[in-house]
Image (cartoon, rainbow, N blue to C red; front, side):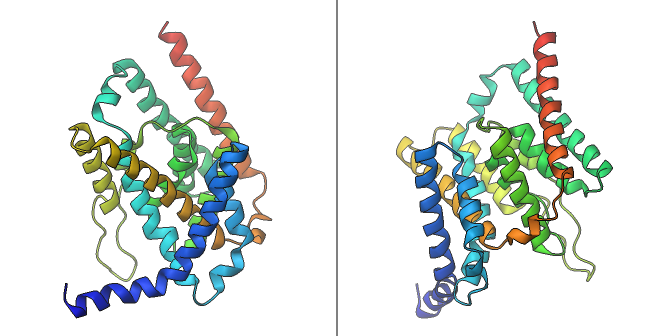
Length: 281
């Protein structure tokens, strides 16, 4: 590596260092509290991050916090691919797989429909319906990473935060089916005529490749465990950063409609699964 290449790496690392360090410290505290109280680490990271919101406007920390909330989130989502194999999915059998896929799809569809009826954008219905359907805060983070950015990033971040709080409260089940991430569609470039983004974001492609490599048994158990742990840490770190970029006052005007939306989606999913189980007897 020549001197110019090394300097090219050092500059962004130096700029982002303080913000990443702050996000890591909040994540460590969140995971420690989660292990003690048996509550979602992402929820603790979010709440602790929001309590330290002032750091997001501090000159040295702001760039690293933005980096943690975006790039580290995407890397964490990509590394989720080492948690599953195609063999694990097919071992479930055709009926359970069909039930999961149909339940998630219908819950997302129901979420989109109800979100539009309540005056929200389609993407908020995708975010909440997908998180409820897949049952987990990690699902909310993964889906939020794929959804195109809003004109103002804070809109998407508030939606993500509310969803994480909601699914952490309404559900404690672990997510199983992250390949549904590949169904997120791209949007065209901005009004300025910018280039279109790729059909699939790079981290979705990386996720799929890791699933394939893991399915082929090419990842040693020790490496697999290490990557799973790294993925968890990166998602918690990014959640802490998103929390630090948010203001508590932004949620004072949330109202009851988002709560109605997520509770309704949860009830819809419960009724749907109960119906599937009844028909499968």
